[in-house]
Image (spheres, rainbow, N blue to C red):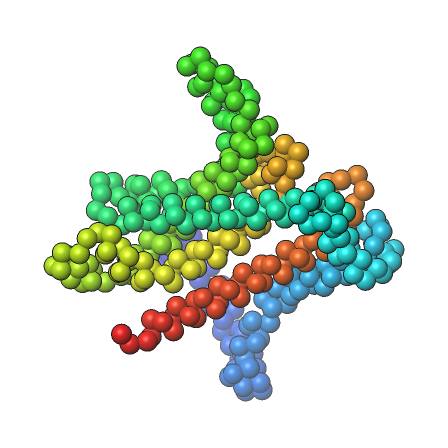
Length: 339
């Protein structure tokens, strides 16, 4: 063992670690006697809680402060208190069915685009992830290879994914080059509103579907094989096996996938920002991009409005998280009920 550690240069590291452990052991024993074994855990968790609070809770407090102040100054002492004025500006609308009558119509268009994107992307994501997981759970040739292929896009940076697809979809890109080979007219994939929205949904699904497929695949592998053997002996059809065995037992995993995909879809930014920049017009402007543009990208930085919009987004994400917890507990309670 010593020769193995020494061959990798780890023997010195092990010796240093052992020396430090022997040096600190009396200190930990003293701390355990003073504060007790139960409270000693806080000694180890404390630094992590400090860092977590510094980079999570402090920004939340700052966000509340900026949402309740106005002006274009960045320094807190230079910003006048305005209360709920920023929320009133965002929500003020003459007719909610006509977005042009809203004071901040871009906010409402971004909200509508985000809702539309979430419904389409999450629905298709869960459907395709479920179908892919069902296929990859079967005994097919090269099953391990195909599992890796479907999961590989998850390992890529969202910016890299968007750049790859932008290279293929731009006016002089690979797709239009393929159309030219067949003497077909070029298509403005990213400057036509309908096509641009379609490709944002498609690229997002392509980039993240492997992660949710993996979750569903783990759930499928946890289902006892005896149930399928019994269904086969009873000559149950594949559809009946799917609806009576697979889907009910996979429901906890489907719930997790559904909520996680919805949270991810609401926060979409990276791929769309690189792919379309929110255009053409506001066709692919989503709520996170509205926050970014309002607070940082526009010539006049309206930090208060951006903070108010981010708090509205945070409230919606909290509701999604609570929904996930409630659905998960309901699924666990349903599994414990004897049948």
